[in-house]
Structure formats: C-alpha cells, structure tokens
Image (cartoon, rainbow, N blue to C red):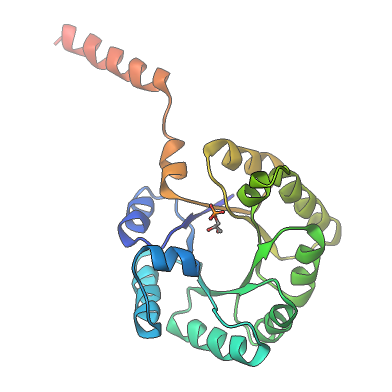
Amino acid sequence: MKFFIDTANLSEIQEAYDLGILDGVTTNPSLMAKEGITGSDNILKHYKDICNIVDDNVSAEVISVTLDEMLKEGRALAKIDDKIVVKIPMIKDGVKAIKVLSSEGIRTNCTLIFNAGQAILAAKAGASYVSPFMGRLDDIGTEGILLIEQIVHIFDNYGFETEVLAASVRHNIHLIQCAEVGADVVTCPLKVITGLLKHPLTDSGLEQFLADYKKGN
Ligand code: G3P
C-alpha cells in the first residue's frame, strides 16, 4: 500500500519523506489556502517546491469546472514536473477531461468520489487514481470503508489499472482498515502517519531495556 501525505505544508512533507516511507503527496485548494498559498504563480511555484522534496506522485488540483479550462489548466500543471498527477473533480466535464489528458499521457486523480458508480466512470475514462473520501462519508453517518472495499472489489473484477486512493483518512484505524480491504494508496495528514509509531508498551519496554542496560554498565 502506498502512503501519500495529504497536505501542502512543506515541513510536514519533508518530515514524512525523511521517515523513508512516503510515496507521494495530495493537495487540494483548501490545503493550499491553509498554508496561505494564493495566486496562480505562487501556487505553481509551491507545487514545484513539493516536487523537489518527494520522488513522485504529487497531486495538483484544477480549480476550473469546464472542459476547455480544465484541459488548459491540467496541461499547465503537468508541465511543472513529471511528478505531477492532475487532480480533477468528479463532474461531467471532469470525466471528459480525464479521458483527454490520459490519452495524452498525463496522469490523473479523480477526486470527490462518494459512490462506486463515480469510481467506475473515472476508471473507464482512464484515471490513474480515484479518490473516495472515507472520512466525509463517516461524517454523514455511513461507513466510508465499505465504499473503499466495494471499489477495490469492482476494479479487481475487471482488472482496471486505476488505483484506489483512499482519501479523507483521519486516523490510524482508517488507515489499517484500508490495508485490510486492499486499497492501493492512502492519503492522510502527518499525524496519522506518525501515529502509527506509537504504542505505550513500546515506550515502557524501551525504557526498561535502557534502564537494565545501565545497571550492568
Ligand atoms: O484528500 C482529501 C482530503 O483532503 C479530505 O480530507 O479530512 O478534509 O475530509 P478531509
């Protein structure tokens, strides 16, 4: 399972990368705004800065909603760096844009997926990734993990090459559930990744080992 970090914060991206387990980064307009990155020039430069940290898979989201504009924007984003994956929303023109961009060899990530039908459409259009938002489904009283499991099952049935990128992953139980059902990728905040390190018995066990070593030396 690939690990992506879901942030536009450069120091958090660097920290996850330094851990040696990071496979990519996802951003969205809300995450860019949270870092105070505004204006198209600054946004493009920020994507380049992210690409300079990680090895591959930097999702950069379009902010237009018509086919022609999405194609123009997607092509410009893809030119920033070979590591860019153009993130396109699940709307009618978005599906058309995925079809065109993927035929041009530009990788795409179809975002804002909330049911299996949307995931099938994006996969048929040639998306490299689909991003079902599990946390936001939990927020409205449904079980997000069931959607991840359903999409993994459907893509396996037909051998779709599109990867299931579980998004809106909020805590480490989410992440472990994604691994259990075979998600190809999870994207989550840094605290979810570093949270995987923690167990009180690890801490107390290490403390004891070090104390016992000191007794004999
Ligand atoms: O990758 C999508 C993600 O940013 C949404 O997460 O926590 O805002 O639902 P959240």
